[in-house]
Image (cartoon, rainbow, N blue to C red):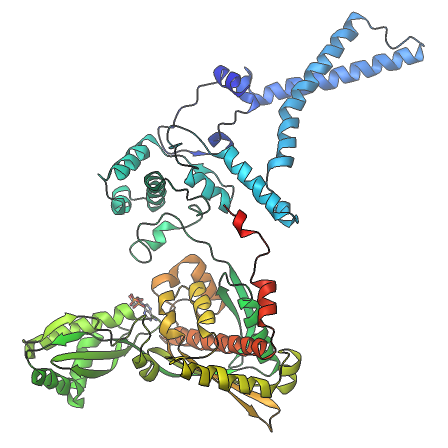
Length: 581
Ligand code: ADP
């Protein structure tokens, strides 16, 4: 049927230029209009008029017959013609509107579909839909199991898809052949979305793997260029849940958490509730300084010590600070700590960085100082701008002891009634569990900054939601959780001390739309207008406050023996994963 329609309509050709087409066009599903010589509206109007006029004519004729008692089956020529016209117009109208309507009811996944109870059936229907809509045009390689661009688009929304043009097809072939490097697409094309789409298509052909499920559309690829991610082929979706309000330093915060761990948001939310009912938490920032530690080498240990003494002499600090601070109007050198290892010297620079997390800023400042030192210490050999004493994205005692980024302590007194009614445990049990698990258990395990139940859960979820560097969750999650019975043993004093919270509200991933929206929700988006650094410092206190809520709730669940039960309920899918394709 479709072939017959196509033959009478204009032949379908691969578009010469990039053209936005609908899914129905992509799937090659011909519409009824292609079979008709008249325009669609005119044809419909003709058949509608015909249908209603013959119905009117036949009804009036039958009414006349009933009145004159003429038998209904005796029909004249005009009535026969009218009956044929009725059947013809009915069939046309049914074919045109009826079949599509019935199809849409049966096959199209609507939002209601997800509310239906049988999820497996829904997924099967979606897969069927995918198969129906995957194009097999000359611009797409049909040897790949499914067309990634189309399928991924389908997962996100039902917006139109761009088909590859002949020019795109040439580029895809060049990438597959290895004659054009994939990384050069953005600069060559000047269109980041198109570059991602082409790279993705080429990758599908090279690997033979489907990227179905990894969305491409609905993302601003220009916004990550040269800043957040190279060679993009799509983006991963992570749900954002909300915990709160967290009552912290007299203000309420709704804390966004990006996670796929069931229970986490619910648990943090319960902690926030307990804190709120107890009058809130308070959080104090102890220190604010990002660090970078280059390693330099000398011919002798004596020369390395010479430089150490020079850098640690208070008289030289002002000169060094002037040189360092040239890197940015927000960078302010706070100090340099020197550590010797034979003839090698590690210089741990610490500086404030305004609202930026500050790694780039501090690195630029360090480079300025190293260039300056080269005049007085020409025998100094700079081995690396980062010598790991910084210490970035690795568990290290130096961060635990000295701090890195923001050092914060956060505390709350949880009312005994709240502990019983909301947290379903007792002050005594919590204090005992904290001593044996977070303190003694962690000591027995040789923990480094891990004297807590799950601070990294909260830190990572808030970091991903707000555009922080998730790898810095390592030192940012260093935390010691303390619990003590107060007010004659009736209430619980809980605190978290976190020496290395590394956050920023400008730079990096914080400027991306979704992450920026989450920062906005917390009231810390972008650079602080009142005082540079106030937004990032406040964000650090919120991270600590959320960690406090998370610690309180998980420890209570453990003390009450609820952990396994709640995880079975919220953290384990009832779906048969063996059937997941
Ligand atoms: P990071 O070091 O965290 O990667 P960058 O130093 O690369 O961040 O980016 C911070 C940029 O933002 C710098 O160019 C800086 O001048 C600018 N900026 C604007 N306002 C502020 C602010 N309030 N605090 C810090 N940086 C700011």
